[in-house]
Image 1 (cartoon, helix red, strand yellow):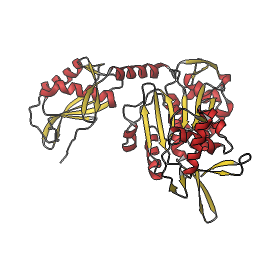
Image 2: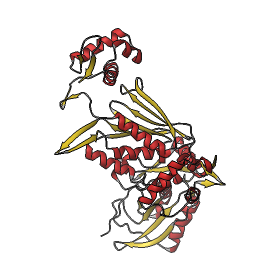
Image 3: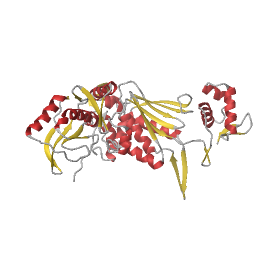
Image 4: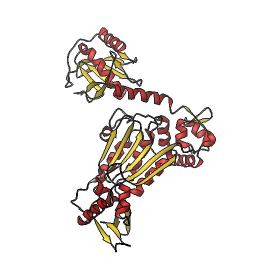
Length: 442
């Protein structure tokens, strides 16, 4: 017995008496997934519901779709037999979002439909305008502005992984085949991928506390996408914690967060960004998390959690950029990156989180408690000031109360009280004398 169930891409209706509601279902599914199926003749539990189906019934369904769904779609409407009962199946698809039913816009959530908010509509329209024009628009950079080292490494990687042909091909011809040249110039996608004129900026910082208040380090890198992917991963690698595992004669250094997961999110940050809104890419390292932010809202109708748990298709905001990253194996395959990250982090016990804003998307890796001595967690709750002082002493044990006070905007007396408290709680110890000694963070 075949049992059809409702989900985000499937809707069940008893009869064509529910035709008006079915139009809302179609529009909502199209706006979320771009394709779906609708069945007339099935109850909500998937069992058959008997009703008469004639040729005119099929025409009525087709006519209603034509009159109600805008922009126009061309569904496949046909009669079929399921479990010895007759049903009408409507298979529909479309990429010209947003779709409306009776002049209103809806989106699918689980097996229900919700009317879109003005912000949701605005995001769809902005993304469509961006997708249609930005990547292929001609930049002002001639082919002489191509970075030879970047394209050389790209070509070598692509050939080695079998995603580029192993043939003598000039740089210009290679980029032309990838759709990155227009009218003798690099287009916008080609510029951010291969220009030698530092088309993009990546801001990077290490913070003393879990707030963007006290910097332990701040960095600003310029370059093309390939250069900034490498610089971003290098910066994180140099500022996270590593542990050493020794097995026999083998000595392995293990990062607190899998480097493959970090690399995947950094690559996705550049692959799915929106490049025309003036916001820069950003990497922020806090005591409790590492956050990677790209300009532009999350580019897909699903949530990141959906990609962890299901095999959903990815919507490409930057088709040409994503294709280039795929060709050199920076992207393993379209739509699988977040699932890979989830599996890697689950294996290592690393929690992840994300924040989806109107013009940004932030992915965060949670870090474990750093107040650990000999695998015993210190039972001390630190406030923001104490965390800042501890972080600055960890960075440079020769810091004095006066130098720390200047960096965090507190008085020397306040900082000294904090240092005394950290000492009393066994988090720091003084080594050497007052003049030549230093603070050691335990």
